[in-house]
Image 1 (cartoon, rainbow, N blue to C red):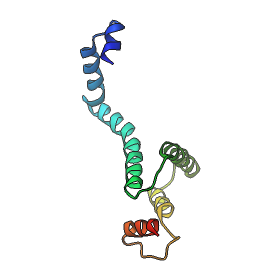
Image 2: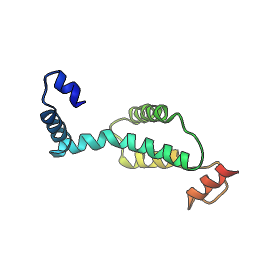
Image 3: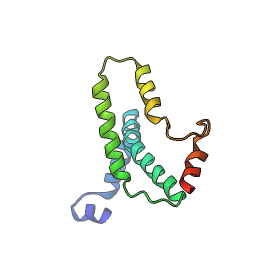
Image 4: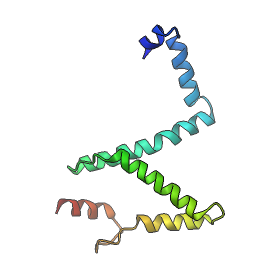
Length: 117
């Protein structure tokens, strides 16, 4: 990257300094950085969990996009004037697992156990 900057007539040190300051100098920079990085971190975490269970998840990027589109659709469907408890309730309903007869107090062994059968 530095070579490309030098060839194009830009100072690489100044460019990297401005890039770092834009991302981390003030509150808005931190907010934008974390807002952009969080979905990517969670997508990587999901792939890591699947690989740890000897499963291959090759659709992480598509799942990220589909989840974002679905969240947008639900937000539009609910509308701006709803009570925050509605959002929390819908999040709980969507994330609940009703397909297994095991207790839901500890979902991780249920997921690992069902994946190894």
